[in-house]
Length: 112
Image (cartoon, rainbow, N blue to C red; front, side, top):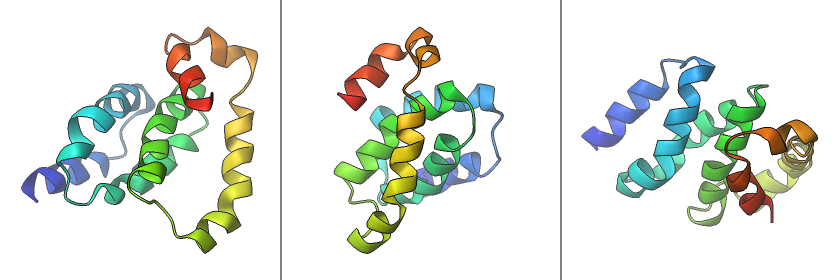
């Protein structure tokens, strides 16, 4: 509980975009497995995904998919009503600039 609360406090600080990428890389493997309620990170991931930064959006995708598939993010009705917006954002990431990012291999694995 203390570990989870510490991370929530950190993520509530509205990190600069430059700091979001390393945090987004760290969360899925080193933080989420130790949280009692991983879904509390959903807002952070959604803000990052919709940040407007291509690199941050691509990094957020990994955690969002983890929360969706392993931890049941969203009930069926809520997901279906916002699914179109999510997929529009996801498809907007598929452009030449994305494949020039340093972490492009991760993106390609996630959307495959």
